[in-house]
Length: 162
View 1: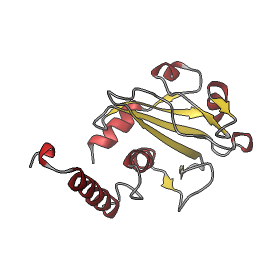
View 2 (view 1 turned 60 degrees about the horizontal axis):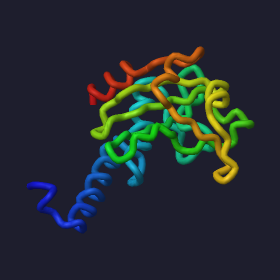
View 3 (view 1 turned 90 degrees about the vertical axis):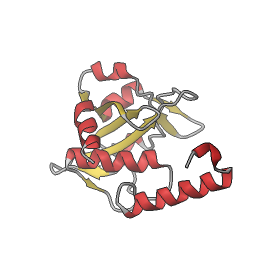
């Protein structure tokens, strides 16, 4: 079966079926955009952390040592090479300890990943009033900042083991 032979409606139905199957297998937690859910699952497995139940304000997983992780992923494509992560809200309330960020290529292979302390997120992120949130562009150069831990190999290996 070639994707080009499928109608738009058939492609949408296939997407829905794939998302439901991934949810049933525990790869993603919802039927929403798979990048976010996949990243949460992948990072939690790699860090041996426990995913938060439901929607927790400010963090997505908790490590065995109590570290609270906010987890964000970004898929780069030929049409969109932006490294901007989704909104980070309520930064003044210290909602997490570490931001676990992963950038993927267009086929969801890990390009780079890091643990970024909250204070570094605040330093490099920019507050946007229209979204009432901080926005962080997770460029590769951020891996060289003090306090940032490069976890690219760990995340890539965890993804390869699935």
